[in-house]
Length: 454
Image (cartoon, rainbow, N blue to C red; front, side, top):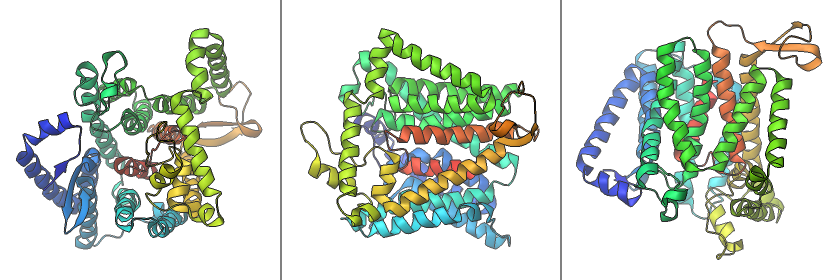
């Protein structure tokens, strides 16, 4: 049976329906298994809807599992049975495209598993952050065969945000279930939804909002679809606003600039961005807010600098540390030995996606991650833009060496969706400079969903 891992107020409410919820979860697993055999794309979509259910935990034969992990494993087993029953061959194109970086990441994470001070704890993180998300990536690359299949996955992403967004809005109005008491005061209330921090809300909702922005542009003439997508995007944006997560806002701003830069006039976009930055630094009111943030002079910025310092000191302490990192789940121990307990709490990660991968999976894992991102953008840009013949300077989007770069004229809006997916990865990386956008059950799976959708 499953236990719940929420704030005590949410937990108390759910415990009133403990048997009913557990029965429902078991029924869903049965339905998921049936769908995975008969129609795997629907099983994949249902699993995506259930991404936040990593907060339901259980123990099977002494091995801890989250409900999300069980969903992924049931879907994977069902998909394999689907291949066997219907004598199908798995698609390998995407796997071939990303084969080498994925191999590096898996090899590095497996090595790091044995460097961890706690093999049992590290094994749980290894399967939740690497093995199962990559298994789900393999499923998606095989079940997304048509435009309709891709829509099923996209709608599932949107549905997965609804409960998170609506609870966040409810928390803003009532203060119910907010994880930390210090975030509940009405004047500076920060919502956490089902999670333990406001940043976790932004890390999950931010990339999906950006993807939906590209999808809205792709089907802008479909009024019914645009309304439905807006019913997903608007609550998510409100919940993000109520988190007061500066990293999320920064990631969304970078994604928006990226979309304008590659879909509009590059010179005008650059000029507007520069003008806004200069104006915000000239006006005293905005300068007092922005300057401490970009110079890391506020408390959060100082913490980030201290985390980077601790990480750098460890990595440079020896060639072994530099090459192999610290092992999966080891950063809290490293930080605890170096931190001032009066100034900084114990944290699980250094709050920088590149340092995260370096410390958790070593230099090999960091190289694999960067390589994966490069391949993702190369593939994405091939969908977004195509080189055209020399054109007059008045044409929009004049690019490198006098070539203009125009959206891929496929007639179905796919270039807009690809642009949204690329912008979502921009949001993840930019937010990841000051936070942890991968090393969390739902976020690791979300990352590989984005890789599969491009």
